[in-house]
Image (cartoon, rainbow, N blue to C red; front, side, top):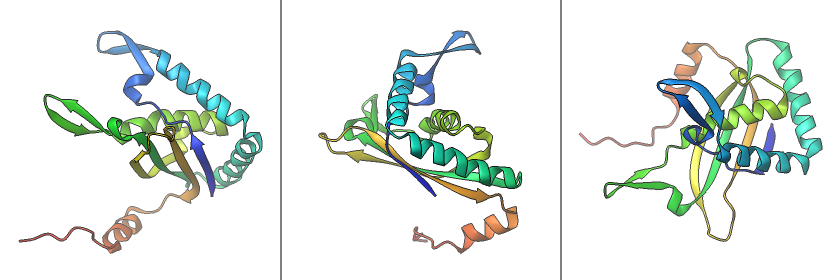
Length: 166
């Protein structure tokens, strides 16, 4: 298990690339994306042994079998006012999943592994106090793909947190 704490908060996928053709096509990194990459570079430069050991650990795990994958759990710390978008008088919650693809791309680059071997685990946004900068904590866990039957059973066996009323 590898923990990256105080990692720069990833920008959303919508903020990362600008489209220059209608309907998609050419993508170009935005100013926000370049700023995020610079913050990641500074974070990584301060932790070279952590990055190196993470790459080696994932290397050992992923080379064993194609069924080995990496589970990524993420706690995203946003300023409270950013957790909700105000649209037409309605406060809409932030789409935390929209930040994960950019994060996976950057983690793949840092560790030297294809992000197709990563899959999301727990992705949970929360708010940080005003005096603490936005950031995230990432838990990287070597894992194995299971059969659908086993995964389904694990989900069905999990305690239910919803008490439906009929």
